[in-house]
Image 1 (spheres, rainbow over the protein chains, first blue to last red):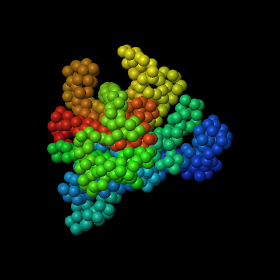
Image 2 (spheres, chains in turn brown, blue):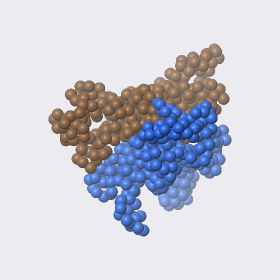
Image 3 (cartoon, rainbow over the protein chains, first blue to last red):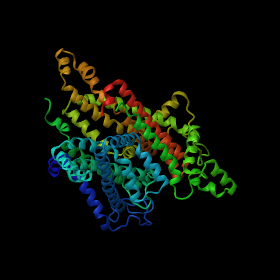
Image 4 (cartoon, each protein chain N blue to C red):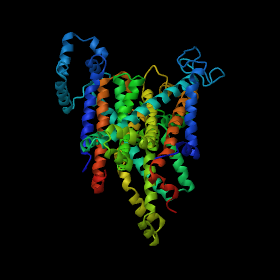
Length: 282
Length: 321
């Protein structure tokens, strides 16, 4: 499968908006260290409305909201990247392993996949975070361990198709090892599927990280949008909602939207059946 | 594969195992996870040993697991140390509110989602369809709790149309219809948010299914017979389009329940989600474990039921994968 990702993103309005939003989030994260205020620095100026010094005002303990917003972008994108990669890797190994491992391994792994799909994994992550304080690595690991199932189903379906392709059959006739098949033949062919799976996993990771922090079980040392929302929600009846509560919510919503839009542009590339809308009928 | 029952068994074992492992994952003392730090400080060594025996913590892990299963089978979920009474009692007080909220949201979002999906599919690529697709697509991108915050700010704080939190006006002493009206006013905002966020996937699915069905020959036949648009839209195409939709019911329950947790937190609604947040804040571990079991097992049960219903309705589904 050779697919022009860049062209697909650039060629559609949805793709351009999605890519633009993601670039904006990346720029915000990159600019965070340049901002004159530190996100944790307290000051006497509490609940100040936006001004030249504090573009988005300050919160209840005098911290600069803009600094927190920019550092929140770093946090969200770092979790998205790390958890997205790890989740996708697990999906690939499980999905492809199920096909190559033979009937028994396949049946076992698919039982487990279905089981994971039926359980509300967000609840598991929430409760787990209450017992074991999850720092960055722990959080990423837990998000990936609870999120690989959906991707694994898709990878498995694709590998089942690829397995019958000529070059894979040829390699098998020459006695290629499972490892060789997996990484030399299947991985490159399945890359587009993995990219879409990565985008979806990244979106889920951002949502989960924000949700945990919003419920107050996130990493208390990390500045994140979810934590800002949790703290600002207690002051919603004061004017501070307009500069403290809305910005992290909007930033979070736009970041999630960017993944959603990019995913919706790239997804039809994989499955010709999804492309039907464009030329069938009428 | 005849059915997915083995998967549900695996899931149930996973849930129970996780629940058993949780207090033992804690750095430090599992009894602290069961009873809370404050209580252990005041305890005599004899009482401590008695507690350890009660939870079987002095035995090997395998024996502890059997112990735990036995307690679970008797419905013994322990004592909430924040509320000071048995966990099932605490949960029982909050459950009706969540059932009211999540149940109404499930009903409303299902009916609205299917109706809008049918109408939208019927008018494919017309202005109404495009508008709905964009609107619901945007809503779909928002986390449940942020949409809740937006509704809270707009309809509660700015417009004063609805109360900001709770399920009833405290100490109002309403009875009869006044009480029902009060409950409905408090329910309105969380219900609207939960309905909206759960509408989207059903809408998209019904719409897609409708578009496919409209290309079928029997729809053309129905039109050729001179049936009215209404009859073709609902009786013929609509009914056929809803087949694949039922398959999603189970998955939707999972999303609905986790959505309800976050929405209840935003509106300080006294249901399971509000309770979960309290339990998290107080580190009330027995209550946390009880809530975890209740939520995961009921979502699992809903999934299994939906699967069972689907196989009964459409026997092909049993062999679908």
